[in-house]
Length: 356
Image (cartoon, rainbow, N blue to C red):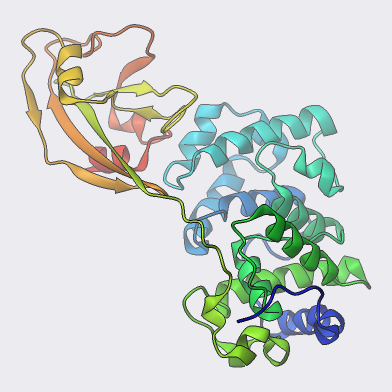
């Protein structure tokens, strides 16, 4: 079993960046719509969208977002509802809320121009250390290291780094290694290419459950390949426990075919999205309806979140009038026709229900 490395092998230190840059030039990805640009707005937008989302999905959303909000000032001037509506379906909606807040701060604090320093970038909402480094490297040639999940996998395998990344001290050490491996010359050219090479390796060659070592530019220096068991890296023993929650969803539809939707609170599940009224029990839902209101319980279904299973129970009702179908105060809601709710930010399972 590998030991935690006290340093980087000299061969890796001298060759790794150079070999990756050369490999990316010949074999890497070059045609993605957010590549071949030094525009920090486009790079930032793609980095946020690509967090926990597949490239194929982002390819659908990225051009639509740019068409609606072509620059950071346009995004900053939009309402949060507009941003969430366009983001609807991408999931992880805190990214969209932070995206909007970040645009507002870039305009307010930096005059609408993204800062070049990774420290300044990291001070903005929704931009962590790795995202800040990606923007700084791609757009400004800054010598800054990225360390997302894909890059952790690549580096731990190449270095044979078997320390448990559940511990913050070990992740900090891996950050130090990532910084030591960065190119040292012609940074305006090599930093974007090297950063993209790490992303490409993790996305196409050095995969979580499969490796294509013959295609890897680092195969000759990779400790994991020499050991014959690359899939054991990275090591992370602490697993987040999955939980489950049951929610009852009121599907109230009037005779005109409009559905009652409410804006969720700014905190908690589906924050700031529009949604059917949600209750913690069937009794609470029925108790909030006008007395004598007939309901129909549809089949429950499970919506899977990252670390939680939501058991959703749709309950249909058709109120007699056009007043709010639920008796509770302080909740913003309205009857909305399909032409209205299709452009709103809606939780994925609610959009699925409405789409039939």
